[in-house]
Image 1 (cartoon, rainbow, N blue to C red):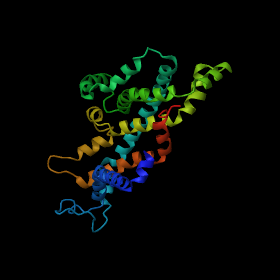
Image 2: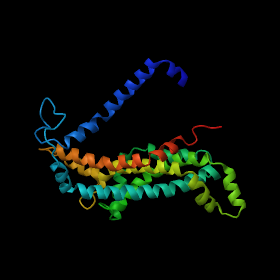
Image 3: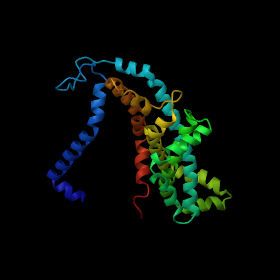
Image 4: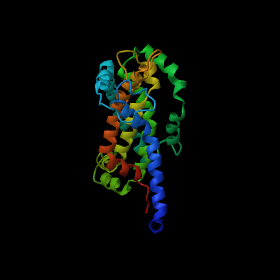
Length: 277
């Protein structure tokens, strides 16, 4: 296939143009949001639209932070960070048990994954009543627990495939040398599955970072994730487009930086086991 493409330069050029076109289409909202951060308030509503602002305006970032952006980013980092950590710990242990010991039979992994098929809106009311009885409304622990419950099935499903691809001889040799099953898991399986762990952690972090429904229902003023704060800037009489753009840009930075820093591990993790001998 590769040699055929090399002999047909026109096909290669067409595919490249097609990829660039779709990439531009999908990234254009983020590009427009980024440009709107630096526009004057009047330039946002002008027609025809202004693509390059006449003067760089940084006051929108300051205003967004004053409206609670700094605390919202901090709250979201706490919630996403702890839920990702819990999802990795529980998910890796469960996935290793399913992959190596076949606990629960063949269908248990599917039933765990089926939890994500449940519409979140169906569980909002009972969870609200449950957390209200615990006095956990408007607290970090309620959102951390919910995001962990949502992410653990995904982590189990993803990590199970990584552990299944590990050579069983290495763990058998560790057991013969006197290691326990947990030591074989922690010293052999986890280091070998590090790319998979990184890929899983990144996805779990993104899911928790972008979660909106439960954050909207279970928070008030003490805890306010960034998704809820952005939604609150859409009022009945005024929509703070400039501040929304600034806050949306700042909210995108942590995820983009993580994806760039972990790109090598992410690619290795997603391709682990794709080619079998």
